[in-house]
Image 1 (cartoon, one colour):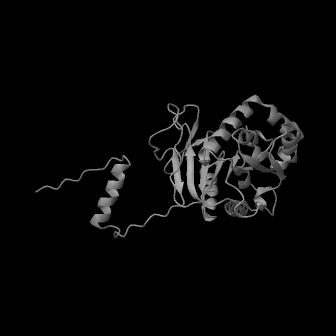
Image 2 (tube, helix red, strand yellow):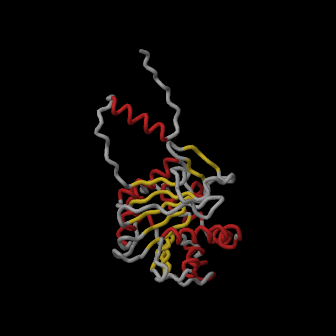
Image 3 (cartoon, one colour):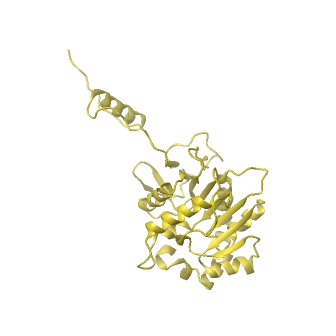
Length: 282
């Protein structure tokens, strides 16, 4: 089955008929609710505070209802008028709704929000629906305006479905250019139901629970990933998360020197690679 992003622009794809089907599908409602609750958890909000949040790609208000149930105030933005009509008239959500294209930037004053969530929306920005749409420019403009409208020290959490390695890297890299740090958190990495594709240094679980956690307050630890067996791991191996936006010091060892070779072998051992043992005969 083809991806919705390949069929048409979001405002065309989610017409009245498609929006109605989407909003009454029990499976979609269940999954969206679970992912929205997880996104709120990854925001790491104060327990005793009602926060003001932004719901990016709010659609028919499924995620907004979860925000309300969690005791938060929110504003939702979406490009589909049909979806927003269902949110306003069908679900009667409590949040304010804005019709807008996030690729054109977010229309909010700096420091407006205590956090932001987005469920199954950000991947749409990777596609061009007209000659004047440049995905890279749209991603950068979106992340720059998002960074500006968030209070410092807060987070934005994006659940999304990356189509390829390059798409995942593209989204992450432009978030970093805008000033964010953070990385990917992949829930249930050991599930046999997840379709796995190999990436350079890690495994991306396609069509499963993938969250891009963005932070505005400098270097922070990524949240723990959920597993198939326990609610939380005490340790998150590289297979479950990928960190970006934190610069590493380059080694000052001369390439080809004994120290450089020794350090390279040590890194290989830590990665579990088998090394040839060279013996010196006297």
